[in-house]
Amino acid sequence: MIKADFYRDSREKLLGFEVSGHAGLADEGQDVCCASVSSAVMLAANTITEAFRITAKVSVEENEIMLKLGEDPQGEGDKVLLGLLTHLYLLQEEFPGYVMVKVHDR
Image: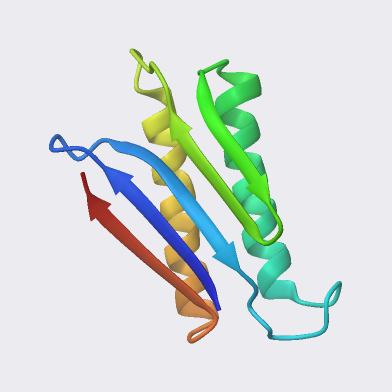
């Protein structure tokens, strides 16, 4: 199962995420669920760090990625993360039992 944990502050601004696991819907390289999640996560991380040039702590390991926003005075990172969160909620509906999304208050 793919687990996506998002973190937000007391003002409900998203601070970052951790996504880990493997859907197991199909063999490696054939799993459309994993490909969908991976592509969305990479797009969000690259948009934050490369397009908007927001400082972020990013860690990529085998079947795991973590991103924590740094200074984001314009709130652009929060908006990108909200787009990713919304997309992953839709994938959770499309692939029940293979994707689990949670939001945690910090």
